[in-house]
Structure formats: structure tokens, C-alpha cells
Amino acid sequence: MSKLSAKKENLDPDFLGENLDKLFAYIDKVRMEVAALNQGEKESDRFQAMSKQLDGILEATTDASDKIMSAVEKNNAAIEKLQALVSDDKQSAVIEEIIDGQNEIFEACAFQDLTGQRVTQLSKSVEYVEERVASLHELWGKDELDKIELEPEKELTEDEKLLNGPQAKAEALNQADIDAMFD
Image 1 (cartoon, rainbow, N blue to C red):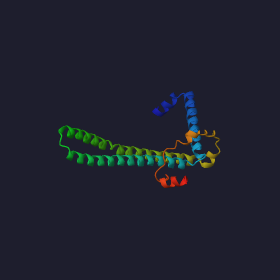
Image 2 (cartoon, rainbow, N blue to C red):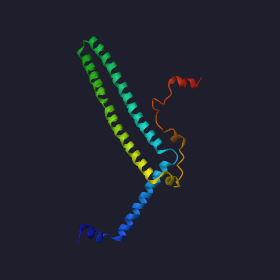
Image 3 (cartoon, one colour):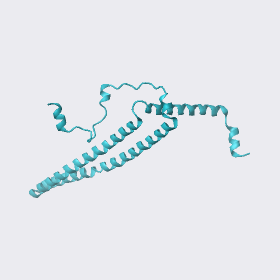
Image 4 (cartoon, one colour):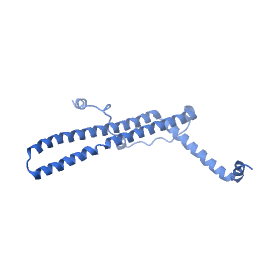
């Protein structure tokens, strides 16, 4: 008797039936989720929105890091000028403490590199999920997914409608455009 046939004999039909029911229920749940993505906005629009948000994170952290480093460089230049004017040892020691603090700030700006790496990993994950969803979409077919009746989406409160984060620079109005609205 082979190992396969021995395993088949030991399988309980009730156990198999119960697990098949669970598997079919899970597949149906996945189908409903894919159908929900299909309703309303296109899922590619949602994935593009996620990608834009991740790009916005990268842009904002890069800008913040650049501004911090620029300010530290300006402060260091001013500190060097001040140190040249000071002859008192106690004052020079305080200036050295300030320089040490400035260097710590500069070193802390390494967060931007780590953030960039992690956001890039997230972007790749979003792309992977988008590809998998597109595959499921293709597998079930748009017509079949459109037939599925879904619960209506929850209406957002006024506060929830505002929770879409800051605009990306490319989409944001400049100050002149904002001022023109009030004219």
C-alpha cells in the first residue's frame, strides 16, 4: 500500500467536508472583496492614490530633511563666526556644546534615507497587491463581478472627508493662486 492511499484511508469525510465548506466560504469572501474593488472607483485608481500618498511621504521627508540640514549649515557658519570672536574659555566650551548639538541634528537627518527605503518597499508591495487583484479580476471576469450585490459604502462624515492628507506639491495651489481666490 502506498503512502498516498494510506493517507486517503485516514481522511475523515466529515473533516474534508467541513474544510471544503470553509475553503468555499473563503473564496466567496475574496470574490466579494474583489467585486467591492470593482464597484465605484476603479481599483487602479485606488492603487494610484496609494502610490501618490507614498510619493508624498517621500517628498515631504526629503524636503524636511533638506530644510533641517540647510538650517544646521547656516547655524554652523554663524557659530564659527561667533567662536572667532570669543576668547573666553567658558564661552568657547558652550559654543562647542552647541556645535555638538548641531552635529547630532545633522546625523539624525539620516531618517530620510531609512524612510525612503521603507516607502520604496511599500510601493513595491502595493504594486504586487495591485497585480494580484488584477489577476483575480481577470479570473472571475468583470461581468460576473458586476452581478454581485454589495452593501452600500458607508457615508463619510464631514471630518472624515477632510482626512486625505496634505496635497502633493504638484497638485497644491501656490500662494498667489490662494490669494487670488480672496480678491
